[in-house]
Image (cartoon, one colour):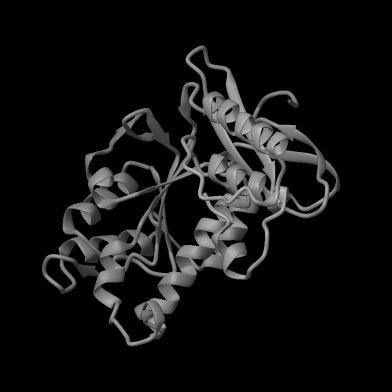
Length: 276
């Protein structure tokens, strides 16, 4: 983590930025840090307290396993197929296709994160090797309740076949903005892609716009959410990030951080459990 942006503006990062940066990383699942902060703007005592906080919280968030409920397939095949390098800074491709993919991926990702859904971003290798067990898609120590494909218009045939088998087995598969339409290996629409389309037409695979997907999270998919709030008296729940873990004895370890400027007050609920 770093105060690079502040230093580029010839500013000194405030102490809140130190904690905010670390808390953001904790919520995203990281617990081992290398600091690139200058520490110029805080006292030695504040530096020690900050480092102790980072070490202790990082140690706590290694307990058990992360309770990620949702897997989001990273659309790398579609991105590589659509992307054309440019002479702009960072070789940005501003074509409509790449813009749509980027906006869809960002909307899905932030939509989940701002609703306190613990999410893993997976690739085709993980998807193809994961196993459906007791209604959950399992890989390693993870067990997912849903698979999201954000604008994955191009996909490996094996991954596309796996998506179809999961949906046919009753697993929750959601395609946002578009279906897998092109085989990565063949560059054309094949049997696997036609099967996806057929399953979407009968509702076995959900095809949703990003707006419909966010509404679905709010209204119809509350079981996917690891944290709920009740009795919000102030602040914005969308600025609360979470990291949920399950210890070996079944107890829940829940990390919450407020990334907003205002205080946040509410009752925290675990699904099907008493307030915590």
